[in-house]
Amino acid sequence: MASVIKLESNVEESISYNPATGVEVGRVAQTSAEDVQAAVDRSRETFHKWKNTTFRERRALIMKAREVVLSEMDEIAHLISAESGKPFGEAIAMEIAPVLDLMQYFARRAERILKPRRIGIGLYATMGRYSKIVYHPLGVVGIIPAWNYPFSIPLGEAAMALMAGNSVVIKPSELTPIIGLKIGEVFAKAGAPENLVQVISGDGRTGAALVDAAPDKIMFTGSVATGKKIAAAAAKNLTSVVLELGGKDPMIVFDDANLELAAGAAVWGAFCNAGQSCSSVERLYAQEGVAEKLTKLIVDKTRELKQGTGDREDVSIGAMSSERQLKIVEDHVNDFREAGATIEIGGKRNEALDGLFYEPTVITGATNDMRPMQEETFGPTLPIATFKTEEEAIALANDSEFGLTASVWTRDYAKGKRVAGKIEAGSVCVNEVLYTHGIGQTPWGGFKNSGRGRTHGREGLMELVQPQHIHVNRFALLPDAWWMPYSATAVETFRGIATKFASGSLAKTTTLIPQLWKRIRELRKK
Ligand code: NAD
Image (cartoon, rainbow, N blue to C red; front, side, top):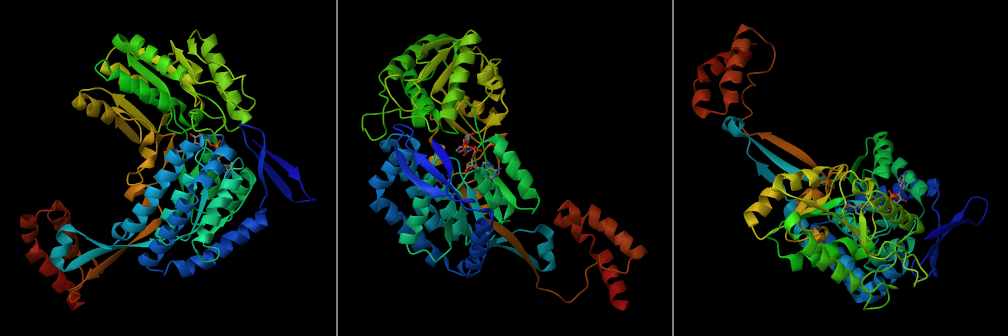
């Protein structure tokens, strides 16, 4: 929940509320487009100093920031809970713990990942040449996150960008601006140089101004619709973008799966963060023989879940983050009802609570032709459909514009891996669900409309640098056979290069030597 009020003629202030209670959490002024540009300009100045720091110096900053987060862990978790509605224990488990792990990993590992490396260049090496790749930082990295993991996603991306030698400007979601400011405070307390990490505030207009201010990279997390707008706007300055977008993630349960475990995973995967995770289980496909038993286990486990304000330790499901999001859930559940699906449990707002609470909802009889099986719901709903064969399960899972994550449940690991390899998604788990964003060591990103590019892992760090190829000829005594002027001898040599040298075969290339000498002698006479 957030509302915008006019302070003066041209300054707007946004009020952030706790979606579980309606109590105000804090206020921030919307950063104007001019101030956004000034922030990016300051950031670029700081970048020119920061890019010259050693990995040791960068590591010291990130490890100090980690210490700040650790020392304020409960306070930060309560703030995340207050502004987003999630249980504060979940804020520790799903935001603070993973980002602390990511920070220590990249603080220690970035230097090794970004170490200059020699690469094999095949037969060119026989001509005395070698190639080295070195990695340069990009400059200013603009981070525009969503509201659902408002602390861990921008903080993790900022830590990676800084380790790679970049400076950072973060534009938090308008639904979670105070947590965004907290990230800036963490780096300030850790002793970050001035303007190395800046946090600006505001809604999509501020985000658009950040894109227009031409940073050197945009790391965006949010909806497909906004992702497309950002890609179009970024193209004007050829700013490269990483887009982490929506999902409609399938969970496939085969009849040989451990059903008790699969049911627990489905409940957590669908309902943690009140279902507002990009990698939430949004479609469950159960093999026909076990569908009934699995559904009963899921419904029984759902019935046990306590819903309430995020400050209580025994609460598993908190509030949704906005009325708009809750209305989408209502709309989708109504659609399921009208299309003939059955609501097994839930299916309505939680009237016993005042805030934005929707009951965890299990739906059976879902089929892929129902609209909410194709659109992202982003709420605490778990629609269950059935399948007969492995091929059918794969086809149903892939029948989506999205491809972020998926999970396959079976005791037959060979089958699990076989099916995983056929699913069109950026991460596929066998007998696990949802949590791989928490593994900072592995790449994160989507296939299809779930995104472009990667965050996390080696691949994610590579998004934050530009590789430079340094090519050295150690025997720079002779001209190259392909230089000018061209001649009949030259063309004959080029034929030989195409048919022999380009075959990659040393034996074939050796037969080319007389022709090469002829050509080089010709060039040296000129
Ligand atoms: P959103 O697209 O509405 O907003 C995301 C961010 O973009 C916000 O900070 C917003 O202020 C900003 N923004 C809006 N318009 C903009 C514009 N024109 N230019 C620049 N910035 C602009 O998304 P949301 O509702 O905050 O987040 C929910 C979505 O995020 C879901 O689809 C979810 O799946 C996705 N998500 C994806 C991942 C992932 O890793 N793939 C992770 C979390 C959330």
